[in-house]
Amino acid sequence: MEFVRQQCVFTTHTPVPAGHDQFGVDQMYQVLGNDRAAAIDQFGCLHNGLMNMTYIALRFSRFVNGVAMQHGKVSQQMFPGYKVYSITNGVHAATWLSPQFQELLDEEIPHWRTDNHYLRSVYGIDPARIAAAHNKGKLRLFSAIAKRTGHHFNPNVLTLGFARRVATYKRASLLLHDPKRLVEIAEKIGGLQILYAGKAHPADVAGKGLIRDVFASAAKLNSSALKIYYIENYDWELGALLTQGVDVWVNTPRRPYEASGTSGMKAALNGVPSLSILDGWWIEGCAENTTGWAIEDGEDEAAEATSLYEKLEESIAPMYANPHAWAHMQQHCIAINGSFFNTHRMLAQYFENSYFPPTPISPTQTSYLEHRRSTDAVVAEPALV
Image 1 (spheres, rainbow, N blue to C red):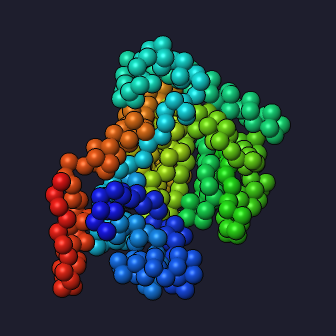
Image 2: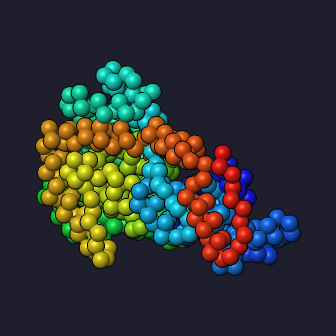
Image 3: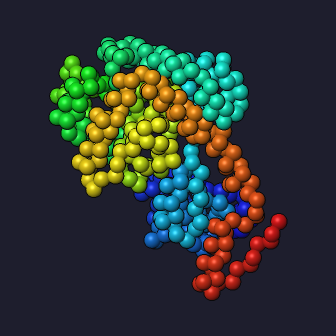
């Protein structure tokens, strides 16, 4: 068992119960056979009388981590018998940056492709050029939508984006919680456009219901001041176009179920700030009025929707109306968040802390050994190599 642990590391990905597969003991014996099933039972991998895939991974891994600082803390509470670290996710910059930004960075910061830390040097680029590169991405997005749907959007109007897998905890309809308030804001700020996209799992009835709710709200609220559109057939290409082209990226998960989230990281690479619940990666990425805005925690959805509307009306819209200030925010998004929330940094942390740790026995193993001692079991100490 200890030999296996030395070869294995485990990254847990979500606090949502559906992400931790469990199987009945009878099924375990039927599929795995008596010897393997008995071994799983012997090594303490059953939890609440079920074979739990997460507990198997915890038992047989020398290093365990969550995918964001907050997720590591949440996972530690879920699995108190194990030491859970955190390595925050990142996205591949060269995949998700728009062609316009890649061209600009190749000209000004050519080493960004081999070392994403160089994205910090975007502070040496005129903010007006950054704004121009993003505007080209916005025009490219609107052109693609027009070809797909026949609907046309105004590139001069503040545009919010919400696109991801549709699950109930992601609360796609929070932005539409108070339709009257949303219409008033749109009229006051000179127009607002909201683009939705995303699919629900075929078996997720509630998720599909959320999509229908957004469609219904859009049909009622669309006007000359407020345009809401749900783009069908969400795919890799559309996801990239949206994170490259909208002005603000919106994320409204119910805490603490957002393990990390990466769509906002893709947006930040393209100079797009986030308006998001403080969960997942955004706890680490949010610098208020610099890289985006935090939707304040509330006692219920109404309170959080109120915070969202206040930030939209009082902070976001006024800054968007000031092109110079907005261009500086786009610059901050790339320099602060783009230079950190990328796969270069993420993989370096996995190599240094998980794959090739400085010590051969992790606290996870120590915790397990202490657990066995506490139950008066005899355990052979693994050799230090």
